[in-house]
Length: 81
Image (cartoon, rainbow, N blue to C red; front, side, top):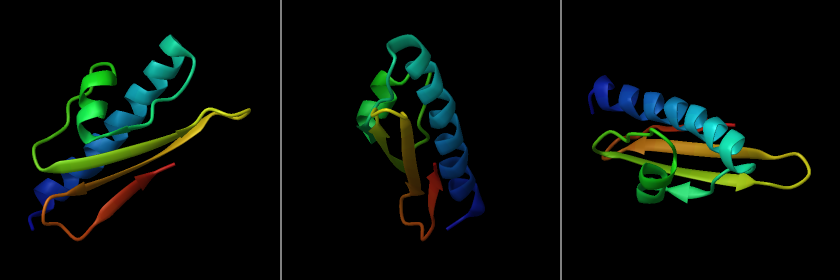
């Protein structure tokens, strides 16, 4: 597995986190999503080919989210909290 696809997964996750913050400002809560939902509902988010992503939101008293991303065929999973 090339470093390029791993770098894309890590970069996509960081970009998704920025888009989650924009979503929070606009909507007032974080979005729980998986690959296709993230692509269609996070503002201005583009997911690289071969990257899978999941974001789990907790919109309780202290809103937060945790996201993971990995590359197809890769061995690394990146986490953003």
